[in-house]
Image (cartoon, rainbow, N blue to C red; front, side, top):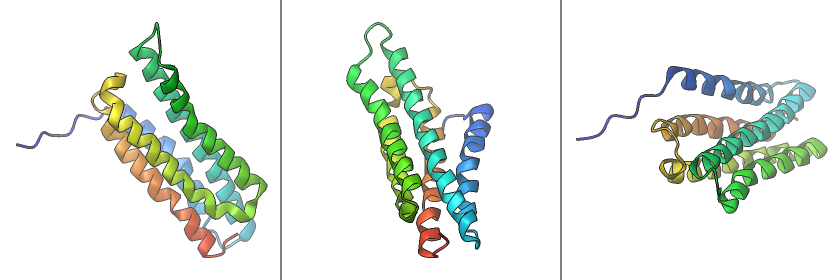
Length: 158
């Protein structure tokens, strides 16, 4: 018999989708017919994607501190920061080189990498039973949204 999925707390689900909304709105703005508006949307997308990766890294860091408060694993703490650092470097690159906004699709890979680690280690990290399901839903949404940026680039919106 198949086990039912864990119950997702309503507040976590609502806040998760509210957190994803600015990313989706910025990506949709990047599809604008007006070139400057589309570019602004792509830049806002890149910066907010870096913010989300930083948040997820902070969650991972918190899980590690909860798992071993007296002796957290330094390697895990470093790995919790890597997606955020790469995300901010990519956002800076896109802001400084607007012609490279199509590269913003790399954020999909960063979200996928963060999710893969979260999914594999959620139980060991002390995450609630529902956390992997919430992350799967929100990360899937974020990755789909990330694909709007190369679409806007292909449509020559900026």
